[in-house]
Image (cartoon, rainbow, N blue to C red; front, side, top):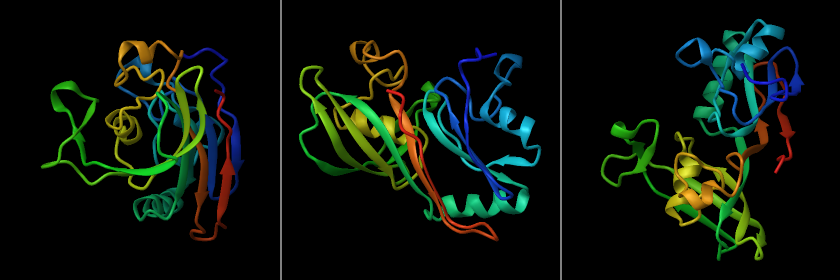
Length: 214
């Protein structure tokens, strides 16, 4: 069980969906074992019994996560995500001073089977993966950069692996950052900040914002 400080505020709730602000350290869905049953979905379903998972965030990533209420809405929202009709923006703090103000990272990803759950770049077998990066602020004294990230595709660990490949691993990334970058933050400094859902079924379009806590 996570301590009470791992609270996930409900950012939006209506007949169609529930959107919560998942804290870093909380699973999106149950894992294997009795010690991994506490998760964002379990906490949501305790209050909204018809809530079903639509997408996931890494355990270390904080921010907005949406649940469909009932199978029809879950299916419609899942199709919207798969069709790239959902606009998502993340915010992160990365190591180093990023030179370009805006650029794209287009590198194919595949699971690194011997080292799961790690992902890796593979130009022969990897799935197409595209991330758009925009610099928000450069901290010259700290030697870090705050960036906005738009994952055009939604591969597992995409943002983390793409930024590592660009030479700017995310601070606090226990899976991918070198020790000195991992030590710069007590958690992964990656947050799902903005979520814009299209109108689906009888539900209107929805736009939500959650400022990062770092």
